[in-house]
Every structure is written in structure tokens, then in C-alpha cells.
Image (tube, rainbow, N blue to C red; front, side, top):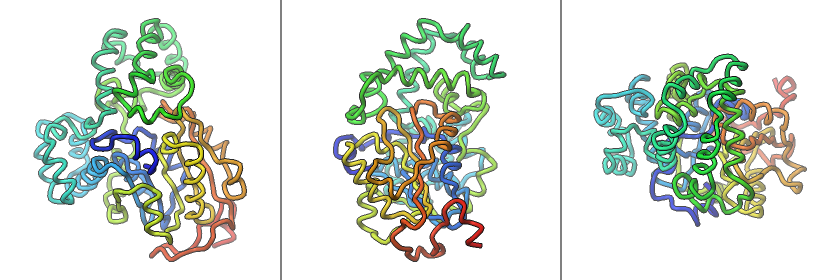
Length: 392
């Protein structure tokens, strides 16, 4: 999170108990390799953990909100202490008769601040830690109070069963997209309601135009062009758990790789600006920037992006989302950053966390990194695409 956003928003509680950004497209965009050094917005921790599955040398996660870092810390402890199915139970992806018992097995691996947070909130553990955030409670209201006025449970189940592209389009047009769906969706996902129940009103400071209309268009894409049976984010919104799909960090095939690389992850209660000011020698290969640029002025965005460029290695990749505020490389950084628009657009069309209006991928030009510094096991600049053969 950036310093500017932190100055206006309330970060005293869990805002996001899950990362509502698709790690599958993030990993393809960043092309994380062994030995890379990654900077990641922590949020609830899922996507920072997903980066570990690719074997980087170091993942540095930052967040201004200590409650968010408590979410990350408990996930790390769970990967250490639990088996895969037990992790799913603790998160809430699967039913569980005693999540507090699972928490007690993780508790000893927590730092004192994270332990104090979760000890003080046993109700969040009992409900599943993936449901502990304000944003998740917002979706819970939608699921339990709004959707039943629009569709019976049998119709929701039919939607989530997926089907062929033609079957999904026909079902949406004939059975799902009725007048009540469009009306209540526009109300519930309006700037007014979302600002009070889901996101902090401060996050809408730089938003122009209709919020609900843009999200409705993206929802239509997710419910038709993408397969709901393969969409864990949609499944959680409509059922409160994961049914036939899991996000990247929770899939069984990624569990061991993440667990083996946990010692390569560190997290800090800092803004990006504070981290880079405290360690001016840091240089990165990959940047998972979430949607932080949404929450700052155009001037602050340009300034922070320039700072990130100064802390990038040759060929470094940056990935971030636009939800409602358009943000991408400004003209004054054209000498250093190259947008990969074709890749970004292709990945955006695959984005299962469907509410974002744009996915941005940018790359440092070869030769633009100021110098290479020793980062332990990773000392050489990453080659730009097309240069790999020459470097071997």
C-alpha cells in the first residue's frame, strides 16, 4: 500500500481476507524465475505465497495494515503446520468441525503481533480465516440478502456448473440476466454502497463515471465467456466457499512448492516508499503491485512508478490492475518502461477475478537499470526477453 492511501483510509482491521486478484494471470505476466527478487503487496497473502511456487530467491511483501500482515502470517504458519486439506478447512474453502484446533496447531509459528490479533478474534477463526475481511462480509450480504431476491439456489447451482461457451451464453441470456438482476446489481455495486460496505470511501477519490455499469459488464464476461465451474472467486461470492475450483495458492499441486520456499518470504509493516527509502540498494525483478495506483493522485502515481523504475533490474516486469481509475506508464517514463499490451489484454480476458477493468504489464528496457547490487544468491541482472540465449 502507498503512503498517500494510508493517510486517508482506515487500516485498523482486516479489509481483505483473501487476495481478490487472479494469481494465474499474475504469474504469467511476471514470469517469475528461480533466483528472482520480488516485491509484492501483501493484502491477505495468497498472491505473495503464489510467487514462492516459482522458486524466487526472495519475496518481500509490504502492507501498511498490521491486520493484513496477520492474515499473511497465519497462512505461512498454516503451510508449515497443516496438511493441504487442513489448510483448506482453516481458510473456509472446505467445511470443518473445529477450526480453533487447527489454529492452535499454527499458533506457535506466529510472531507475537499476529498471535495477539488472532487470539483476540476467535470468531474469525471459527468462520474460516478467508471470510474475516470487510470485503468478504460485503459479498456475504450480496449472497445471503440480495441474490435470493433474484435467483433461487437451484439457478445459482446451475450457473456454477458451467458448460460449453454456447450453453453459458444461452443460460445467461434466458435465465440469469433478468430485470431484477440488473437493478439490484447496479444498486449493490454502486459507488455509494460499495464505499460503505465493501471498500473504504477514500478508495473512490479518483474514480469517475459509473462504478456499477463497469462491474456489471465484467460480471457478464465472467459468467459467459469464462467458465464459472473453474472460477474460485465467483464461487466464493455466490456460495461462501470454493466448490469445484481453488485459487492458485490453495491448489494441491502448489502446496509443497510454497511450503518448501517459505523461508524466502519476508513481510514488513511499511508502504512501498518507506521500504525503498529504508533499503536504497534493493533491486527487483518482479513487482506484484495489486491495484495500489487506484488510490493515489496522478502525480503520486508518476512519482512512485519512477521510484520503482529506479529499483528495477534490467528486464524487470511490473503487473498491476485498474479497477475504476485508469493508470499506466506515463509518457515521461517511456524511455525506461515498455508496456506489453498484447500480453496484458490476453490475460485480462482470462482474469477470473472479474471486477477489474484492465490489467497492466510493463517491462524495464534492457540497459535502463542503473546498476546491479548483490542480493545474496541473486547477483546478475535479469536478461530482457530475447536476450536469454546470449547470456547462457
